[in-house]
Image 1 (cartoon, one colour):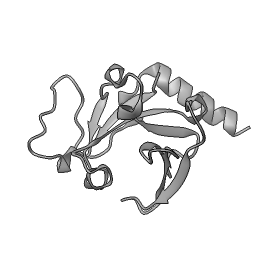
Image 2: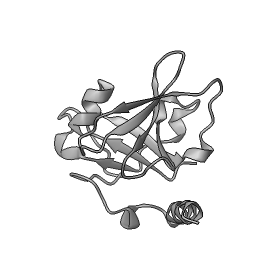
Image 3: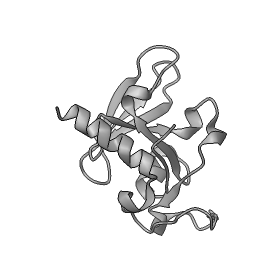
Length: 140
């Protein structure tokens, strides 16, 4: 299960995906399983200026997940549309909605952030604990 699912409406994600937003399920990288082969990691620029690494399928070249500088290699932002059952992972939050496409209608039942958000406020306790455990494990 993902730690949290972001629906990002920033212009950078719009440009990168060629769509109105990207839907990313944040999960521990060690939990990501590929059915066939290793992904090709492609370094790309990002709006933060710190860049990101996009894991692409070696066969079809589709973006599978990203590693962002802030989260590092320990966490993968998996493109929900690439999963076997993407319907299981709707967004937990909409972010950077200041630049969302005007025709995208957001549900009232999901938090909407003009920019980013405070993880401690929005993540479930179990997800915060998983994140802390992984960070603690990797710092020893």
